[in-house]
Image (tube, rainbow, N blue to C red; front, side, top):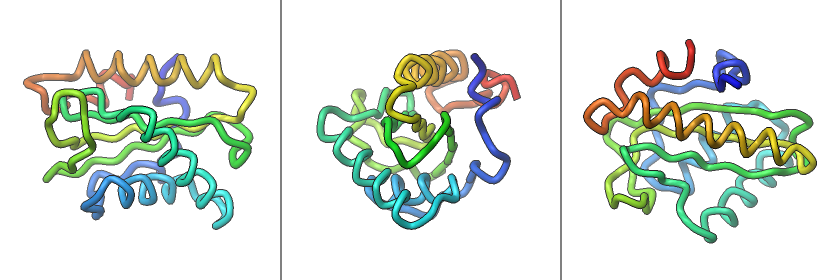
Length: 140
């Protein structure tokens, strides 16, 4: 599985404007171009997921993810915030790179593989902890 296969070109934003964790989640969900109700549902689910533990995996990378009826197939969005955002990452560092992964409720195995692939890409692209080479690791 290559995450790049699940990106729509317009689901990538290399200049996120958000300055808070909640706003980043909203901005990333907005990249999926869903209807308002679906977007609100996803943001709510992602916030709930974050209460279980931060999806900030370290190396300036976060992989917010959830399963929801708001989507009918695996969807991925990517965002970058050069200034970084406090995302309560496990290493305590600001997050600059965000992979959003959402899947339908019955697609847990595929969603879990996508999260693992995001983490693998992050590890391969970690170049000094700043995510250099991320798109190469994604296979793009």
